[in-house]
Image 1 (tube, rainbow, N blue to C red):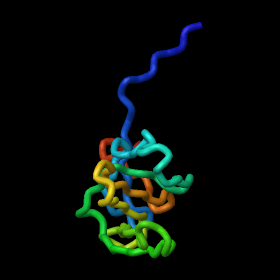
Image 2 (tube, rainbow, N blue to C red):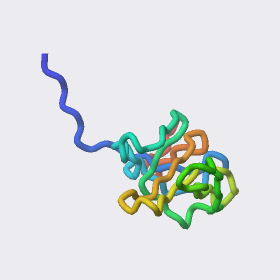
Image 3 (cartoon, helix red, strand yellow):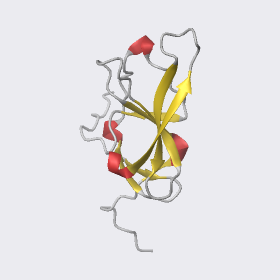
Image 4 (tube, one colour):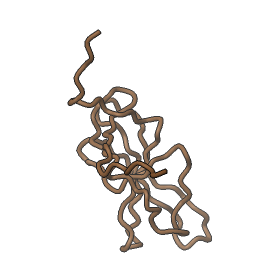
Length: 127
């Protein structure tokens, strides 16, 4: 028995803030599903989605410094807390490793902080 062909067009999902519904312009096409830098990459929990790029105008940014072990090569790590521009809800963190020039910035967004944006092309059904 032959399997049906897989559709070539996969629908994309855009996400908005889970607290207020503000459109964040995050697309499922911008998700990092390849796994990045392999073993060097931080273990991403099941509660996070990693994006390669975000629209900076839709997010508030708050710089943070985390102190690491004093014996480490780098005594601190820098990350950026990502906030919803409209309501200020915490959405996740952005990591920009300037020491590693070959690694692009990555954005870890909490799944619970997102909701799928309503599809404007979908017409409401009449009862």
